[in-house]
Structures are given as C-alpha cells and as structure tokens.
Image 1: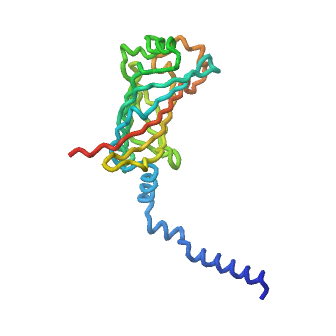
Image 2 (image 1 turned 180 degrees about the vertical axis):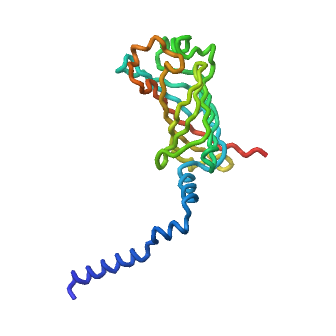
Image 3 (image 1 turned 90 degrees about the horizontal axis):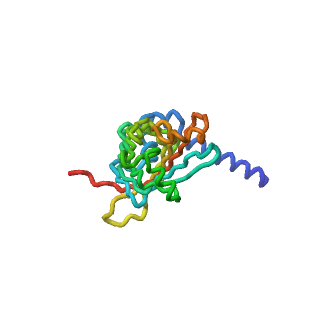
Length: 226
C-alpha cells in the first residue's frame, strides 16, 4: 500500500469515529429539554442571583447631546447610587438607580451652571433623576434589554436600557463580597422631559434620540437579610 493510500484510509477512519461519537440532535434534545437549556444560557450571561449594590466610586454615567444638529456635547454625572437585582426568573430582575443631576460636568463651568438651571435639569426643583425597571429580555448572546422608567425634570417616561454583563472580579480578597461589572446604554429626547425648549433648532426634526446615555457600573453583592 502506498503512503498516500494509507493516509487517506486513516483520515476516513478518523472521520468515521467523529461521526459515531457525536450525539444526534434528537438525543441532545431528549437529554436536555428546551427550558433548562435556556435557563442555563441565561445564567452564563448574568452574574449569580442576588442583590448588588452600586459602588459610586467606580460607576460612571456619561451622555452625549446633539448641538446645532451636527455637533455633540459630551458630559457626565459624578454621583450615582442604586441596586441591581439578578434572578433566575428574568421577569424578576430589576434595576433601581438614582443620579444627582447637580453633579453634572461638561468641563465648562458656565455651561454646567446653565444645565443645572430652570431651562434644563432645574436641580433645585428636581434634585434627583431615577431609573426603575423590572424584567429583562435577551437581545443577543450577552446583551439584554429592560423597559424601565426614567424620571427626569418631573417627567416619567419608559426608556429602554440595553446592557451587558461584563463579568465578575476574579481577585476578590477573602471575606469581601463578590463584585461584578455592567455596561448599559439608552437614548431619549430632551424635549420629552420638558427640557431645552430653546434647543429646537439644535436637534433637528429627526425622531431619533438626541441624547445618548452610557453607564458603566461596578457593584458588590449584598449579604442576604437574616
């Protein structure tokens, strides 16, 4: 037998073994019903069930607001608190976040004071903005969406929040709580919250959001109540 013939026979043998060893689709479905498989996939894309408290020192909320249609002003809020609840029941997952609008910073003092004033956030009358949501649905492998309620400037609107679980910290010291990280994004229009009436010529007629929000959060697992 020639060398080429021997190699060909070996390749065919290996391929046959792989086919015989691979479980059939029907067998896999019988061993793992659809619902448990879905729950398993969900668990891999989310942290362990429990309540996580947002660490304000390692959490950041950014925004980009359209300026004269083609421009974009970026800023951030420096004070953010809240909790994230993770459950095996996706309908029971929840987010409760509070942001102090007076902590806004666009790196221009005069503009920041204007944004804190009555034409925009009016922080004296509305000292907090909140986001409350319950229930999530999968968008893709590691991406989720929550239809939560954003309360801003005395107005409450449903604003979908899309987020990903970035993972859990692997170097937690003994005795310290588990720490996880998330990234989220959302979009809205300032006029829907009664803000920026003088900005009509700046945002254009497009129905698309004129404010984009990005949030990066680190949160620590809370000990169960006894």
